[in-house]
Length: 141
Image (cartoon, rainbow, N blue to C red; front, top):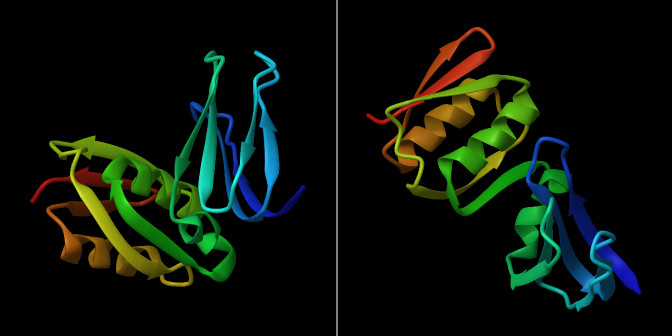
């Protein structure tokens, strides 16, 4: 049934998310046997150790921005943003007095170097980054 969709599932994450861009797909939680039909513009989340599937409306462009060569952050907290940065740039993240609940948005090129991307993030919010070899320390200003 599905035509265009994106699946995001890393072992260290709490679950798996599937975002539908076009067509229709059926999602099934193999633990509970529950299944749901998705429409374009929806994201389904199946969390480890939880028997239900949650579906919500999302910006599908955010899910496939990686494929188009950019990061698209739409009202995301810094921990989610830095998880993506950590995976893309292969760096560790440490938080020191950082407000993890502040929300950020913006579009950044994946071909930019790490320091440029971090500088741009500093321009849009109350966050500061200290780079130490393969580690980024996230602080408030």
